[in-house]
Structures are given as structure tokens and as C-alpha cells.
Amino acid sequence: MQNRGMKKWRPFATMPEQYRGLQEVIKKQSEIPQPFLTEDQMEQINFTLIEALHTHKKVYLTYYNHGQCITETGVIQFVDSLRGLFVFIDEGCKQTNKMRLSELIDVRFM
Image (cartoon, rainbow, N blue to C red; front, side):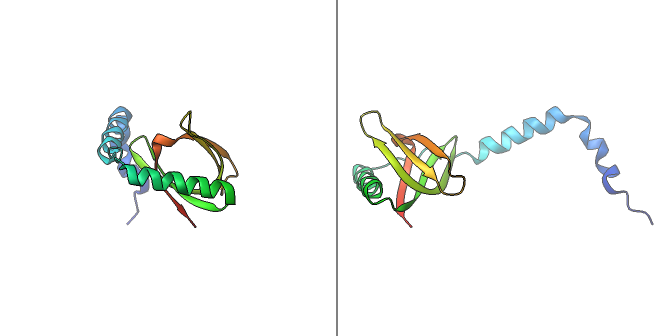
């Protein structure tokens, strides 16, 4: 008996447009709405950001991006409350990221 391997899947690869469409549908179903933060939560995030900025401690940042909540670790480098922006350095990639404060969901010290 001989294994057919990938030959058995070839008939299903005739319509790549269908698979792209299915992937988009699956991705849209997994999206979540942006969480609503109360005034107390926003105030706590603000205090944590300021403390992390002055002490240069590493923090866990949870933010909302395209229907997903993403958590990264990094160091806060700059906070601009007038423009609603902050800059943090990603721990793994050593990459500088600029982000809106409105996208931020949670900030916690490591």
C-alpha cells in the first residue's frame, strides 16, 4: 500500500479564491469589539504610564489592534497626553513603537 501524500488534496486547491474568502470570514468572526474603559481604569493606566516612564520599569502593554487584543512587553519611552500618543520600546525586537493612548487597554508592571 502506497501513501498518496499531498496528491489527495490537489482537487481542493483548484479554487484559491474560495480559500482566501473563507480565511477572511474566519478572521472577521474572531474579531472582538474594542473594550470600553471607565474613568477609573483610564486614570489607573495614566498613573502606571507615568510611573513606568520615570522609573524605566518594564511593563506589559495590552492594546487593541484590528479586532484583537495584543499584549507586549516593553519600556515606556515617551508620553504625549496632548496628542494622545505614547512611545514604547519593544523588549523582543528592540523596536520603537508609537501608539495612540485610545488603543491602550491595560498597563501592568512585570
